[in-house]
Length: 265
Image 1: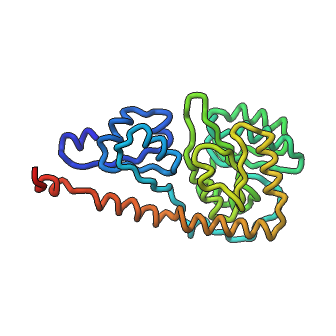
Image 2: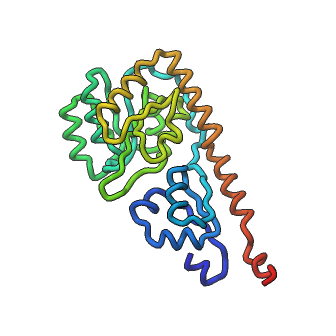
Image 3: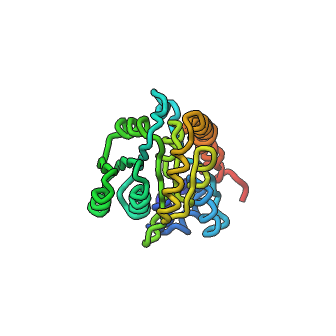
């Protein structure tokens, strides 16, 4: 923004949840002065539109490489839930561990590291069916998605206002044909819905446990069909090449500084 002011060039902004809700430095000014503003879900778009109605807003989803996230083996048809993310309040993993503790035949594998490791490790020891795996390389994360039966994403709005918008790992899991159990929060309802999605109120461990039960109760055929529908939705709506092309088209259509200089005053 500052360079644009000095040089007369145009600029665009991509606003992620962290930029919008946790550290919104100069956010109004950035939105008002940018020639184009991009963000990843309707939840963010609606918030930003209320903040600066005149902003040139565009929803560009954080896309998935559907060729990379394609199953190499059938769904395992077990009772293993997987969660992936930083161990921070907004992920809601403490709620997830409380939910899993209510389900004696469900195992949870949790990939990630962060400041809540000690708290979640203590919860995991009490539950006895939770493995904290720490950080993993991308290939290892993909392997975990291959082995899981369901992905859990129980996001909440943290006490400091921090929150997710539409976590990419949810769309990666859907591309792998996984069922998803998530909270009815932020942009998650925009991609987590029937037949592959099960939603619970944020922070409600009992409802989250019910969602996990409902997902894992589906017979093998229903799981396969739901997973195929999830992958098809990702291909149609969040393919990384398609979303990149849409973003590029918006930028290409913006007036060039030379065009502005030639325009009549």
